[in-house]
Length: 357
Ligand SMILES: Cc1ncc(COP(=O)(O)O)c(C=O)c1O
Image (cartoon, rainbow, N blue to C red; front, side, top):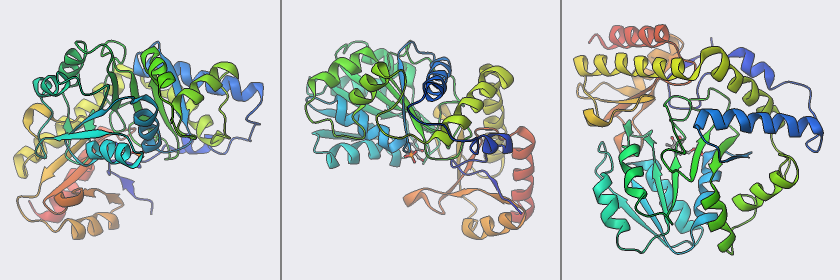
């Protein structure tokens, strides 16, 4: 029996999307490859609400995070973290030899825009890295308020990890003045893992031109210049199977389901899980910053989450334990990608039945 995944990535992938992965291969230096990659970029511009260029990477999202911080920090990076994935920005910067400072809040809380203002007003930084939707805690950062603050720092390159929100959460990248918005295939977009994508603004391009050591595979300026020169082809051989599936799934998201319907379905699923958690367990994240794509539930009744998951597996379902130190203290239910309201209701009924709560 296959297992329905309610984990925050990789997510279930529809069979028709999986089938697109086995489309007959094409050469990566052909007109067809150019057409496919340019079609994907145009569709992603609609998803992200941006006029800026899109870059694709045959890597998971961490690769583009590495590319962003390394290609676009020229003095120092300010990293604002609300959990494990926020810290990832910092680890990536430090491991690339880039000067960075980490600013954190207690787990379950969101980042405060005024605090960011205070940090940036020191004038020490020219790059900001932050997570939009923190998958480890179910917190969504107030990105609109934060982007208002960033407007006072026009030379700052503003990079946002949208790995677990893009495709499930409405995003206006240009209105928010985000220079690099990054996401991965295996979350809200509903594809297998292995490809990631980001927006890349004029400001980010100009900054990258001033950075000497941008690395090799994740040099975002090199990717940008290559696709411009070679009609959307990439310097290295990309995962063409992912490209076929991504183009197809983006067409489905934009034209069959529709973006607004997709965002509404994510909100509706989130509200069902939240209400259930409020009634029976508790929410880990603060009420004012609840994610639309993943809910971290407080394990106040000391359920053995590992055991619960074993029993759920026998019924063809899987949820996630808490992340890192939050293991067994919380458990996480993802409501993202092509999961439907009925799937969520079925999962919650099964948890209630097994826990007798
Ligand atoms: C918020 C967030 N950022 C970054 C990552 C890392 O992305 P990837 O696994 O695609 O490298 C994840 C993965 O779960 C994530 O949830």
